[in-house]
Length: 339
Image 1 (cartoon, rainbow, N blue to C red):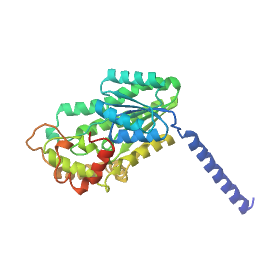
Image 2: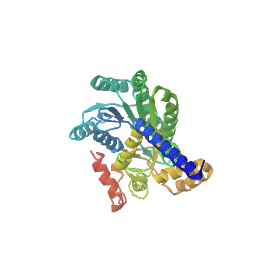
Image 3: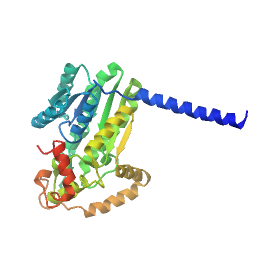
Image 4: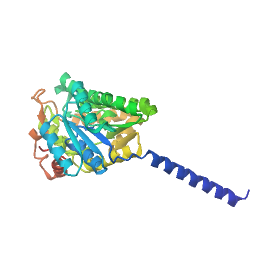
């Protein structure tokens, strides 16, 4: 066989392989038009941004949150886009409330095609002012909330032989961060659940996407809780959750999540900074721990307020009101965090 013919056959093989790969990708692409998507914590922030993304794809929505007024604002905003929305007040840490929500959604729409476990809380402060209750609350919402909702929806997905589960975790679930230990513990548990779930349900035609975001501009810092020297804690946290150098626009993050779901991706790390941190921790965990230890020394001490909690809205400072956080304030307004 001549060299020219060998090259032609090789090129033909490469082209055929590319076409097959493209066809496989197309076959795995999820059409969301008409699908029923349940989003926990869907009334504001990233949850609301994802709800809008799903709405633009033609999905029918079920959103839940603990605050009824916030739910109504989100429902009205989504319905103005022409989307069919069921809004259910639900605390995902309560199994009975979760069962009621899933029953309502199934009765209204016939079933749930996509579950997005997004509900979360943030409590910022040094370990000295954290209490067992802070750890329990974090685990109840961000671990047990994920487990409760998944186990409530899973039977119908198993019966149908298909479905999608999206678990919004955090880079804090792969690298523990100072002053966020209760949050990190819950997110580490959620990552473990999500990855194990993916392995077990794949044979039933159910796909699981584990999302690991870095810092996002969603306005969530206004509704987070701060302890110890709460104004100082809020100052540094609001900068991290706002500055474009270290954070990603919330709507852009939502779009990445929805597209990853459509493509059948199993793991998504959002922001280059989060990817770098996860990679560095995987290669040299001791070095990363030492570096974060230095960061911890630079953060505010416990102060004299004890375990008392304050929201971001109660902890404003000149820094958090400055031009440096303008993008964060804009995101908070846009994603319904200010109500």
